[in-house]
Image 1 (cartoon, rainbow, N blue to C red):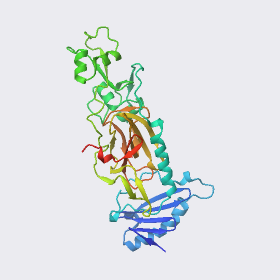
Image 2 (cartoon, helix red, strand yellow):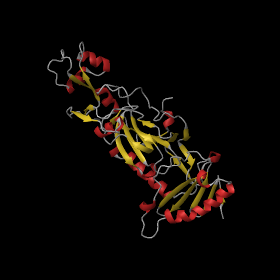
Image 3 (cartoon, rainbow, N blue to C red):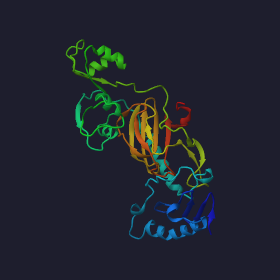
Image 4 (cartoon, helix red, strand yellow):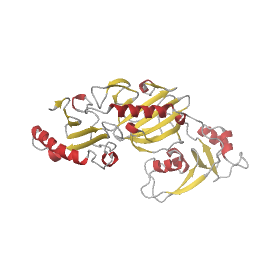
Length: 368
């Protein structure tokens, strides 16, 4: 018999979710969770009754093409990591109910995430001061973006733009040659009337720090056209506190106890907030060091940034990552793009703030 709840029908381990524009089929087996979405406009054209009938016909193809057969591996058939670009984050009736879930998988995801967050690997450390300044030249290839080039060299987009007098963070012409230092800062061509003291005051960087990075014969007189590196030419933090990591301010799931979006009968403690963000740019909430960048189980592609003072921030379900481990990022620097990877009900950003090893409600610290 069918069990109905929130426009959801269950047949054993198979769940049929009927939404406004599509039907999502979910099979939860011992080897993983398998998902297939089918758009009503393609196969359901006449009535809701016809839609239910056609949904039952699809079950056979699900069993054949999705459920692992003898000799096949779960990886051969697992579709759980695929972004469902067209699945909305909120379902009919205001619920996020998509059927029963493998509770053990959820617990394993939490264990993996918390082990990373509490390990020394993701702790903040100061950048090395003894690395010598090196400047490389790089010719932009067709189709490359500034964010990908910045990730390749481990510096910020600000550094590349400031060092090459670029006026846009979005576009860079293929074929042009960029000067890229191995540290965050700005390469500045001295002009008539410029002095080191004047640059220090303009960029609010100590004169001593500029002199330490440059081999200047006479710091009181630097020839016009000479290249001077100004470390950390922009302030690390735009202001005190923590930035919203995406442009959206709409929270779809808050911090604290909630009913699981994968199993309405299971209660869980949500250690962060979910922000509605349909493939938006994700920015670092504060200056820090990228201490994890990659796949994190049910949290999909994720980034952990360690901040001075024992703080850490986590960004989950990303569709793209623009930074790498060991890289230092400024507050407001674009680090990724939100998405729907991992165990997710739709495109959004999962965001956490950790203070001295304990999770805290990010809403209390994010700037309004």
